[in-house]
Length: 290
Image 1 (cartoon, rainbow, N blue to C red):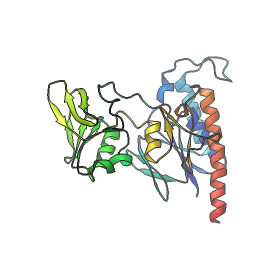
Image 2: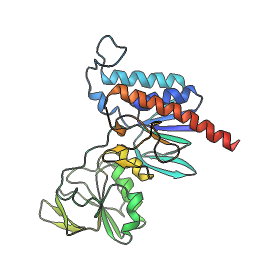
Image 3: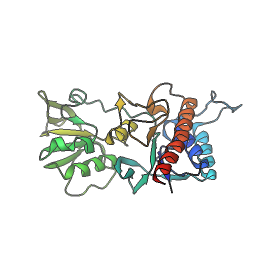
Image 4: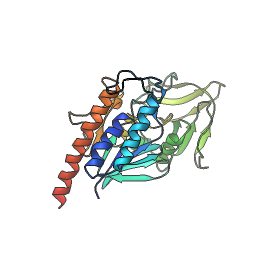
């Protein structure tokens, strides 16, 4: 049966799910938490509510509506996106393949404010292990982060790099790291080098030579996931056409991750547009394979 995987259980993701489930497409929505909207205690500018409603209430109502229509809602952390005959969504606890995928995870997080991090982007600092591991074959690399996403990137680098070290920047690890991956918990002072990154300097005065740094702080953001599969991005947003489609067939994006007006109404519209276009897309590929 044709299916769609929706990453993000906020207004954009759930809105897309309402359209795909009603069209008879098997739909899985994967979300780690309620996102930034859960912090909104009162929403007064969304159509249809005479009295204020909290972000948490709005999300829970949307999720119940999607489940009633037949969508499967999973609580899990997405750590990767790839392609193997079908689009493949990798999570902390498993993997899911789909004919189509929607990225609806809101805006990407900001990068840590560490001296040298921005300066060496593209010159030793990367945000995608699967994209750039090739350039660091046989070299010593590091991953900045302390959770499942950082571990996923480190595991991706193991097969090509000479050594892989997770830099937690003073934070406690929130995942179990295998013995073949090094861990350094020191607070970072700066990243340094000449034209390319060569070293990480810690606040305690110690330093470590590295040829590459992969940033994987917190959870995988929208543009992080898009880049892993070659989707076009610009600054902090995923580039889509008027149908919410990316440059990768079957991959769509909706909501805050596409930029523009960061409002619930915009997210709901884009989710609805993505969902309806996915219905057309899947029907067209089914017709070709019939």
